[in-house]
Image: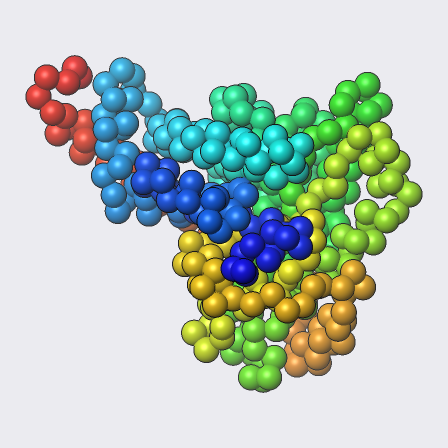
Length: 368
């Protein structure tokens, strides 16, 4: 049995961290759903930038859209992205229905330029969700200080949220509490408590950040230890009377999602993080290359313990080695936002330049 099927059998969802028009038109995503137990996907600006920059798959759509109206680069991008995500959402619709909305999701994020603007983030999240017109689309909002307020308001508005750029237990708990506050407010207003959310905890970036600062024996171990600590916090939270009250009222748990799970160290096994982070009722989102490697030679040997296993003892070793974990979590989140902003600006530049070229070289007979 493939390792991907084993994960599915243990109750962990495997989502693809990729979407391109080619994945959809060639039937590749459909095959991953059928053969590799893929039950959802995530996207980000870098993925779309590469797809737009390196293929001609979007050229006809850009020409067609520009023929009818002048659009900003951002508006044009969201139209193109939503076209892809709607097709993907429809492919996952049977899974969404079969799991009563637990699985079968796709994700689209608001502009990272809004990361410090709570009101604009709330407006953008609601607008994008309305545009999608699909129940199984998450809107991604970063778990920053300003984002936490936006997450609560967006959940209260009934919009499913994928909280992104979480790096620590404390950041996760903050996101989880925002989610619960949003559900509490819905119940107080007489609204349905069933609004889905996932909390995306980034893993491998921890190990990249400290590789040259700790002994070799600690390489590629910090991200996993942070994930174990966070998983314990998640298990503790859903056992609390507060959460149980929400669950009885119809709320569903905000699922933990392991993100940034591609191995960055060439000396480490390419399926390292997938094998280390097996846990029921969680999600692992993986790039295509990592997915195929895991399906080919991955192994499922251990399941995360709800008590965090050896996480605290291992984290103490990193503290002894001079790593300030709390400070690094803040730094990684800040760097993540800046990285997303750079990717977004690259993407907008790519959309603008490609749009200009395609409009200038419009085939003969196509209306201006």
